[in-house]
Image (tube, rainbow, N blue to C red; front, top):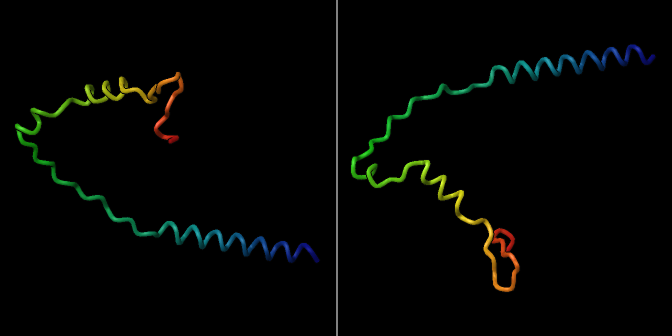
Length: 78
């Protein structure tokens, strides 16, 4: 008696999975559109720092500040 019930349950699960895959594969996804290039002025780009300089500043900046008395203060934990 368990074999027919198992076959019916297996068929129901397989058909539900096939219907789920069919519904997911037909989902609408909008095509990407090209964004216009940003207009940069010469005055704005002349004062900007290059990416290498900004990453060097980030690496040099300490992540923890040493307080008086030898303890370490971590800003994220305060």
